[in-house]
Length: 101
Image (tube, rainbow, N blue to C red; front, side):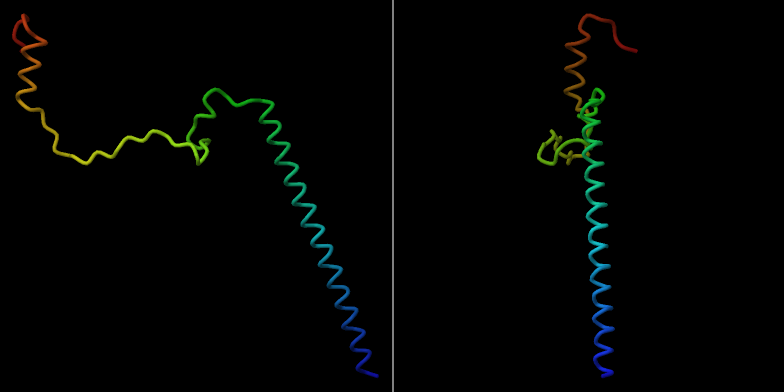
């Protein structure tokens, strides 16, 4: 007889836990629906207001599928101005002018 009393207690506890689980699921679903509705409302308000000029062109607003023009990386670091280029500029650009100080 004692065993049946313990089983009834376990059954009651199990039913209570299942009821609490259902309540938690409903609460989670309600919160999720409220967040989604708030996000949709925010999106509608932003759409109605419109974006400021240039807002859509900021890098954070580029979709991942949109590629931007990227310059290739510069690999050389031995820059020099060759004497032939200097003489060419002096002869052509400053022809007829007095010598530069």
